[in-house]
Image (cartoon, rainbow over all chains, first blue to last red; front, side):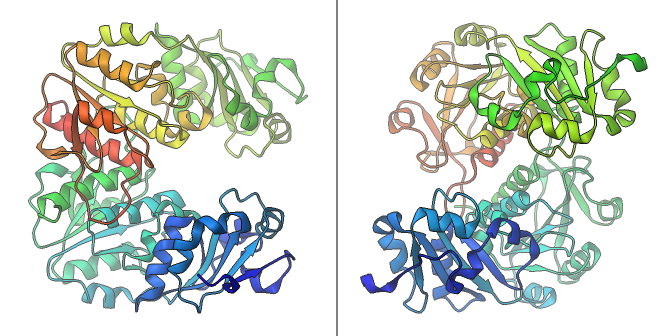
Length: 277
Length: 277
């Protein structure tokens, strides 16, 4: 780690770190492929993605000056074309617009997600994909990706009503998995599921009223697990048209959290497909 | 619903609603058994608890005036000894100290949680309990209770280093299950697990390095599932002294979120115990 790689920022208005300004408010605007990454684990995933041939690149880092000594391993993961800015706490807080107690930030960018049809066409013969319909909560989107990565899903397909997984909080909750799991976010639910059905996927929609117990599914070679929102769930026409599965639970309660439900269903299906060690 | 039951508040400093003042900051202080409940689902759980013989009572409600018309079913669940205050949005926001877009609040109180040993002694012959060790994140505590309720756990036992499940956010994330699932929060992990072992519980600690795959457990009549923190996990002496189980997943990733992991493990064990419909 050459010390002169670090570029000190003393003016919160410095144009070189303009992308970090007021990140909490700007987070909700959509950024044409740019995103904010936070924390050592997510930045480490970003470094790995940057080093690869994929669509994700790191643009710049911004670190709290008094944390730099402990971050040499992390910084060394980024090639020298990625500038590393450092700032004292008071400057950093003024840039971000709130108190950043961790002080480990990066701006990354991602080429537009692949076309839905191209992504489906690129999936292996034996595949497990997770589909989200109408998931607008950032935490839940992040959980879907974290669980997809943990349970070996080949891709996440989001319909156009889902929120952008590159939002700061979704990325953080995913522990960086948004940067590693292939995904598309395009089309209505009918379009996504139709395209999967045409390429030989069994489609299992998860619902409290599902007809088959999740642990009783005997999955085939290509399986798509479909998650809807917590409140309204999946539309009846989707439940009618495809297979539906339920997670059995105590009667009379609200359904499980979407993230937890996706974890249970992915675990159960991936295990039945022989994908877990 | 008699209309004169509603008491209008026009002064944010009114002593009758003093417990709702600045609830966001006061949340973290511990309240000697008082707690803030938010939202229609949690308030409905509070009404049910209040009507029962248990330790949880409702003290007062505070509602946004323009939501009252839609809440008559909810209000009718509370007996007439529970006063219902209403306020316009500007007054309500001034009381709470931030913008409450839902405007459905209550103060409840709970007698001190039962003594650990008494609670364990009250458990049925066939029992499933969830144990939390060192869980300090409010969301994670809430998730543990939501999943415990969903998967028929008889009790939640928290060691003394866990945060209070009556914190506003934990209660909200639990969807009110903190008010319905019996729990204790007392003693160190060794003490809690020792007391369970003495009363015939098989103790299964969940860990990425666990020796048995969670789906391969053949559980007995009394099972305790033990969850540690995401970062450090359970202490090695606990993993050595009791059974340990793992949720298999893709290699090289961070472990699952504690809430999701507890959901998968509870589902798997409750199913193997024949407790799910």
